[in-house]
Image (tube, rainbow, N blue to C red; front, side, top):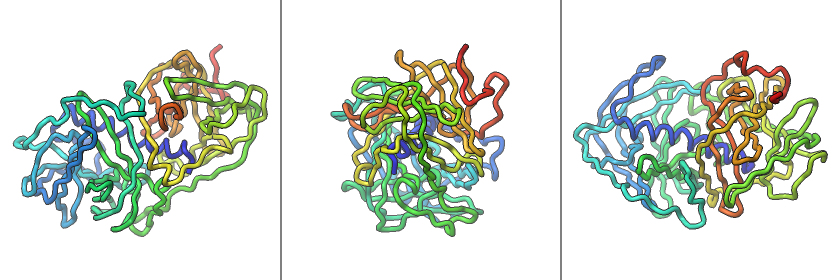
Length: 414
């Protein structure tokens, strides 16, 4: 598994968690029903059967097991501030929603008016040694454990999945927000331990990784209408380097190449640590195509060096990902469309250096001069890690406006 693909998955999981946790920390009331909910949200109450609370280096996680329609399901308290015990009643909202052709069933914890709550996280903790102490929005580590119990439920084809896992001598609750894993009792599971600091709160969450990272193969029969995961298709390519992009931030580095290939300009990111290539060289690289979850029938393109480092399960255990958000102005737009498979990247100046921001879902249509916000991701240990720049838009792509339409594969300021 390619390191950059693993990083994409880690960041995709981390970003929605940060946004969701922040929203919950601000508003603990029952969430309002979205306009297009189908079926509508339903508020319910159940008795807590089991409490799973975890503390790690001052970060806290709180989860509860309740029974819904005869099934034990997972309720995660995203603010980790409640102290319910077995037998207490807990309120939650049952949500059915369709995402990228998948039918997801979610159980959203809502704080009870009479709950026993406390703030366990008033004192900030120092970052672990060897990790970047900068103003990160969050961090994530890959870990492994053994499945003790599978927490699942299904309702009219909508599916929810979670796990109780034994890891490092602890029993922890692991959520699978996209319900795409199919582990069984006794299986080894790879997951993310995600740490975030929001409004002085130190929050910890555990999330199962998609099948292409942890090696588990989905079972199409387990969920009606589901197909097996999209395959990653790679192909050898070559082109001439027209610009070398480099940047540094503390002990983390970035290198990428703008390459001309078949009349298109695209970015090949280099996080291999191999020898640097120069302008004018013919560069061998690979194109990677994966199905686009937002637009079925279409694909997403990315490009990397043919010698890019692969990651094994053991490597994932020691990997660390952290991120913070930043803003910059678009200097250049690079787009490529091959038979419906799309690639989008934006060239911006970041800390005085030109860098390329990959649009992970190729769903944005920014133009030169637009101000954009994006996460800056650090992967690996300080001194040996790499910077990655990516932008995420989880909404369905829409046609570009006149301002954002590029007539060629690239758009430069005049």
